[in-house]
Amino acid sequence: MSELGVEIWSDLVCPWCFIAKRRFELALGEFEHRADVRVRWRAFQLDPAAPTRSTTTISERMGRNLGMHQTQIRAQLDRITGLAAELGLNYRVGDARVVNSFDVHRLQAYADDVGIGDAVRERLMRAYTEERADLGSPQSLVQLATEAGLDPDQARRIVAGHDYAEAVQADGERARRLGINGVPAFLFAGRYLVSGAQPAGTFLDMLRMAWERTAAHAPVGPGQDGPATR
Image (tube, rainbow, N blue to C red; front, top):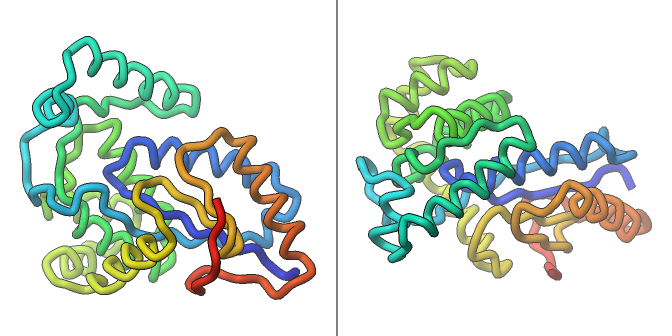
């Protein structure tokens, strides 16, 4: 077997996705064949109906839309903040704005294409979860992407246009075909599907299992449809 493909569906405005990213990276760092793992990030919108611009925060939405009491909201935010802190992340997600992530995904797809996807992904995720950045603002998106290494003129062009819209939609359609209705979601070798921000040990077990089970067969790489099992 020459390589192992891993597809990761994520929403850049999903706090659990950043935690899952860190845990997967820890697992990958311990994986014996990590140099032969090919990771492909795929777009997923948790709330396609969210407004492009909004002043509503996550904590306000938890109370208004989900009917949660302040004690429940605080408990949930404290829990995710604590889990993030274990990974070196300084979450302030209660103050993050609820915005539509479609343009964020388009910009991220361009960054992946030009080879600095992870730097941009890190910057956007950190800005959203730790810095209360408004990812619905075109100016904010361009600034953050530029800080991560994108050419500002190109970033501005992508944000203002419609490039990569079809790619973002295709990722969502592939997720639906595989039965993915939430993120984070990980597909190993095109066959083995794992949902949620699993512990690093679980991701490591999945990497090893997928490698061993597909070693005698041609790999099913990212971008190819194949049967998925949970």
